[in-house]
Image (tube, rainbow, N blue to C red; front, top):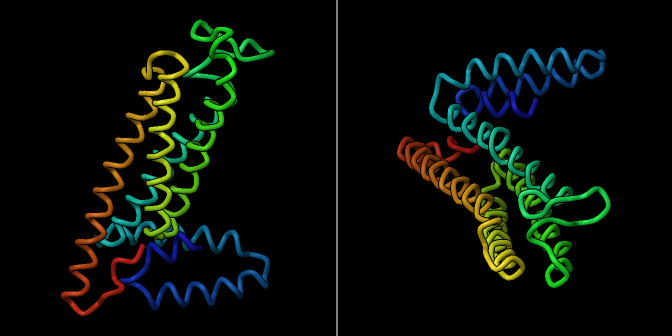
Length: 201
């Protein structure tokens, strides 16, 4: 219902409000899931007819199609060692690890897990339309990525193992920057027409 009503706003604000009221009645009747799915279908069909709606869909696509999959990759990497380390099923081993740097494997895996959780946080803030929170998540993520590259360089005498994830984050930041510019244009258009809330995600 949240996705459906956001897709309808602001062009169909009254319609979205009516859906929320009817949803409360559907909950009492025990048909809330079917009602919500119907609203979602209507909302998604309607959203492509106006620029703010397309902006919302682009934000959802970036969150679900990029941020969440990258988060899953990083969490998998933290648990299994790839792309930094190779697990042998018992401990952390690999061609880049030896007695001198094996102790840093846990710390590097922790940084990678933090990056993964940060991506999930950023995806959530993007879907919520919380741009201030998204900015915090982005800055923390960038700091963690730089830390991971530097730490990998110290452990392996080369930061190359961490570069693919750093490159992925750079691409994400560029996409988020484009989305933020788009949001600014929508807000400007709304303020020129006397509708300051029009571009709210």
